[in-house]
Length: 162
Ligand code: GDP
Ligand code: MG
Image 1 (cartoon, rainbow, N blue to C red):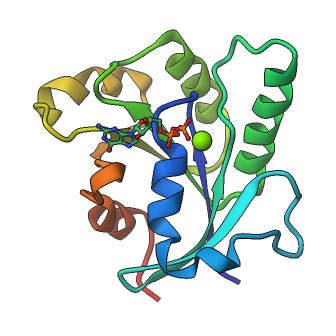
Image 2: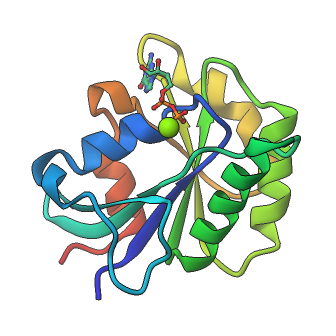
């Protein structure tokens, strides 16, 4: 059984960009997998020797109304069925109330969870990301999903090679 990694975070932080990059070699396998709930987007990834199933979610921001509630529910379910949660935040925007709401939820889960600050290209990542330590979820991992930067190191920290 491959480990399941869920990508969660508020809309527009780069979850789908990361999903597409992680699954780049196995695009055709993006589909439902047995035993996993439908409606979230699943892909099988083989990235630098790391093999896992990755789950993209629509986003969650803690202030959902209407259709967004469904989207947020998807994120909560994705967290439940994941072995590992990558909680994406936007290094350019900085910490938001929504990020804090998500962190509050994740801290209550008994789940391996990693804060991933995306969009660190062209900015001073260390100074931009320091505030995310306030989320109290440990180390902040820097990536630039759009450029493929930091992803191997992130996987190294979150997964064992297979
Ligand atoms: P999602 O809503 O969390 O799935 O976010 P998307 O993957 O759709 O990305 C939202 C926006 O952020 C898009 O315009 C992306 O091109 C942009 N984006 C994603 N990753 C990066 C990155 O590493 N650097 C920069 N500068 N922009 C990014
Ligand atoms: Mg998306």
